[in-house]
Every structure is written in C-alpha cells, then in structure tokens.
Image (tube, rainbow, N blue to C red; front, side, top):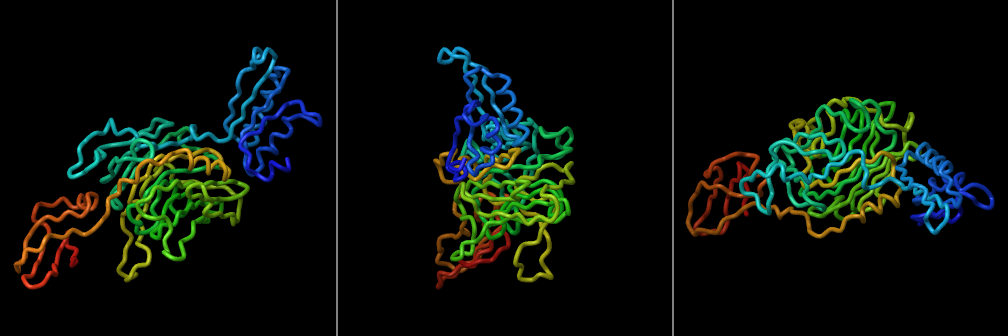
Length: 412
C-alpha cells in the first residue's frame, strides 16, 4: 500500500485470499490512491459469491464502472474466478457529442472550402439519442476524430431544449461528481466567457466549462449556498494569454465532493479550487433549458470595455472548433485524465485559416469603387449583402488605400 500511495501504477492484480486477510478488504483503499489503478481480482476457488461482493463494494464506494467476467473453470484447468474492476471508462460517458453525424446534414454552404457544410437542423447526443438543435451559422469541419463543429463567434450554438437524459426521467437528480472533457481549437478569443458546455442558470446554479477573452480555461460551479465558484487556469506572464489560437487542446474538468474542482490542459493539471462554504455539491435549476454548447444562455458585455457607460451585453459565441465533448459520471483522477488526453493521435492542424483584412492590387489611379471584399467565411456570412457592399478608395501618387469592409474602415 505504501508503494501504491506514491502513485504511478495503472493496474493491480489482487488475490482474494491473502496471508494477512482478504483482498476485498484492501479494494477501497487501493481505489483511494493517487493513481486510482484498475484492479483484477483472482480467486482459485471459483468464488462467484466473493466476486459479487467485490462488485458491490466497488459500485457502492466509488460509483465506478464494473465489469465482471464469468467464472472460467476451464482456464488453466482449474476453477479460477476472475473479476476485472475498471476505473471510469472513456468509452462510456453519460453524455457524448461527437458531431460525427454530418451524413444526415450534407447541404452545401456558400463559399466554404474543405467540404464544410452549414447546419440545417440538429446534431445527436450519442448516449441518449436525443437530437440537439443547431442555431446560427455553425459548420461541420474536420475534427480530431471524424468531424467537429465550427462556431462563428457570434450566432452559432447547440442547445438541448427540454431534455430527458440517461441520468434521470425529466432531469431530477444530477450526479454528485462528474468529469467533463473536450477537444477545442480557438480561432479567436471570445468577447467574454464563452462555454464549451454549460447547464443551469448562468452564474447562479449549475456548471460552466469554457474559455474567457484572454484564453483562460475555466470550470465554474454553484454550491448549495448559490455562491458561484470559479476554477481558472493562469495566463502566460510573457504573452498575457492562456490557450494559443489555431491549436488543438484536450481540456478537462472534474468535480469531486471531497476535493472540489480541478481543470486540466493536455492532461496536465492547470488549476484547482476547494473553497466551498456549504456542502461540496453542485446545485441545479432551469434544467428545462437543457445544455448549451458554444454560447451562454444569457447575453454578456465584452470584457475591458473602453466606454463602460456605452458598452452593453450582447450575443456572441465560442469562436473556433469544438469536438468530442463528453460528460462522465464521477471525478476522474489526474492519471486518468492524462490517459484521456493521450487517447487521440492528432494528425492535422485545426481547419482555421488565417484572418487578415482583405486588400486589392494598386490601380495607379485616384478613385473610389464599390466592391465586395472577402474577409473569412464565418464573418462574411453574418451580413447577407450584394456585390457592391464595400468601398475601396485609391490614390494615384500614394500607395495608401482607404477601405471599408462592411462599414469598418482600415488602411492596409
């Protein structure tokens, strides 16, 4: 047990009959060690009753997934019972948005490249089979596994609406502990906190898992005193930013009733929080609104405004790509989260092309012309315009240009 407490173990093979007692008695202590290893219990007596007791101990103590193989009396010619107890399984989340259902939604999107498509309706949550509504100009694009959802930063989000899921009938009680994971790539930093996934009444009940205007990752929850508790990653002291743009990250958050909250970036612990005033649990409300992916259920003002008196709350969403969003029932250990982050081999960079205000070749003549400039697909699509919406002013003796893209003036 002393060596297990030091961590670093992924598997324990345990006999029911030990010289100084039963292996079943040691099981709860093994599962409390830092590595939280998976356990194989053996007994040479073909003891099905003992195996069943271990299953009961495991599920009652830790609420972890349990797999019990039948007694194999023919194995090695002996009566050998094998019980395999696994930790939380990456293959068995309680909610899972893969965004891999593009075959049902193949509708061309004007001007898009790389096989991207506009969303006409919904995407399916894999575990419950419930279709979630897609709003705004979201697009399918290449993800870390199959396809992913690209959000435009303003209009696009996914919402579950009235939801009856696997945890309860018509919501009811949510799990006491949970783990959330996703793969994300930022195209631009959002105007304020923008969720990967959130549920409940924003900043009052439920939980929020997302990114802020500086690229910090955050996991925020409400306890039984309706106090909003925030666990956030830190900023790079040189760049004053958090997550980099146009780069894939595996992000995860855990809530443990004993240890509080923790967040992870690419399998590495990025922040913890345990300053709860009341009972360490998440309190929920407004559950009939369901989950929101990519957008807050309420409008927020941009952070650090120049004119606070003239800056109002507005609608905006996550700007970038979200893929493989999973919610697991139970708080994973740091080693388990690290294994999740290594379970996907990244083959391609995120499909997020550079964003640069458009320019035109010098004409050598003074004059102003109406035209239609292309910035990048998501922003261009926000305003349905004709072919003469933008203005380019050029000069005969100077290389300077004065350009107006959708009313925004700049000089390239």
